[in-house]
Image (cartoon, rainbow, N blue to C red; front, top):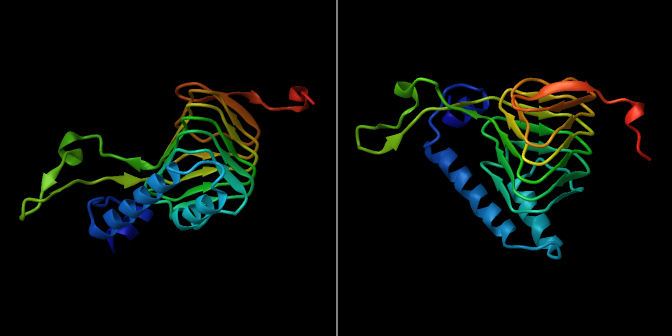
Amino acid sequence: MTEKEKMIAGKIYDPTDKELAGIRQRAHVLCCEYNKTDETETQKRDGILSELIPNKEQSGFFQGPIYFDYGINTHIGENFYANFNLTVLDCSPVKIGNNVMIGPNCSIVTPVHPLLPSERNMRKRADGTPYNYEYAKPIEIGNDCWLASNVTVIGGVKIGNGCVIGAGSVVTKDIPDGSLAVGNPCRVLRKITVADKVL
């Protein structure tokens, strides 16, 4: 099993592996290229995103700057919107549904590091090069969701359809469909109902 296969399968893997480092480096270069563009350069932006996030529907808008670890492990549905400073560490698959809005400074982070320092700390190979171990858990965000500003979604979480996650929340557990959830750790306040209608 390659380190990439281990990573996707949620097993302990070495992120310094040459294949993974190469994919990550390319993604980081593409993010830098995107972040140098502005909203008027739609064709250039689309070309960069097509390479960075090949599993993305064409309809969508990324304000930028954006930061992806791999890009290839992220799947994004139709009518996606991301405000400033979206960070996606997609070591494990990230699946985002249709009609999802993400506010500024949000992070979607799948990597997990061992809790024990003896397992987490950098170590050295026989040739002296450093390496470490980590693993990752997938994230799923359903259709019709809104993540307000400064939300962090932790690996292993599934956010159901039609949810609103309040500003500054840290989502550490699954959120059921149609929920208004806030806080650190994020907790469901209540269901979203027709009483919330404003138009």
